[in-house]
Amino acid sequence: MALTKAQKTIQLKELRDKLKSSQSVVFANYIGLKVAEVSDLRRKLKAAGAEMKVAKKTLMRIAAKEEGLPVPEENGLPGPVACIFSIADPIVGPQIAFAFSKDHPQVSFVGGLFEKKLLTKADAMALATIPGRQVLLATFAGMLRSPLRSFASIINSPLTGFARALSEKANKQQV
Image (cartoon, rainbow, N blue to C red; front, side):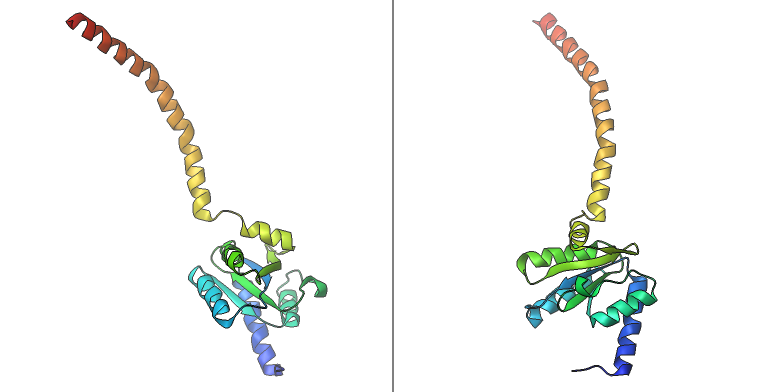
């Protein structure tokens, strides 16, 4: 069913608003998913602060152009494409879609937009496999703690040895 001009105008405004507020956008093919599976993916994305929107590719290109973003080429978006907008965290949307695609091979990345740059399929996959913010913070904290822990162990080692030697000497004198 063809969209009326008013519907296209509304969709274009929605796309522009989403592009403005998003930290990253990933384009994905989704054909072959059942309605319940698409709803499940949308629910998971929404819970994490991301959103999936399906729109005409022409409208996507116009919205990107109007927002001053790089415009995906016509052959760069094959087949029907969904936009996954990550609002709160730039990698949350791609990560959820990537995890979902493990059980549903119909979902595949086509490209995306990040920091006003056009992403290839490989770039979108790389963005999806970056560890999350919490994991990176925990890793960083562990890296900060490790040298301090080693230093404390090295400092403590001679004292422990000295205490053991005194304890052995005291035991021998008691016997």
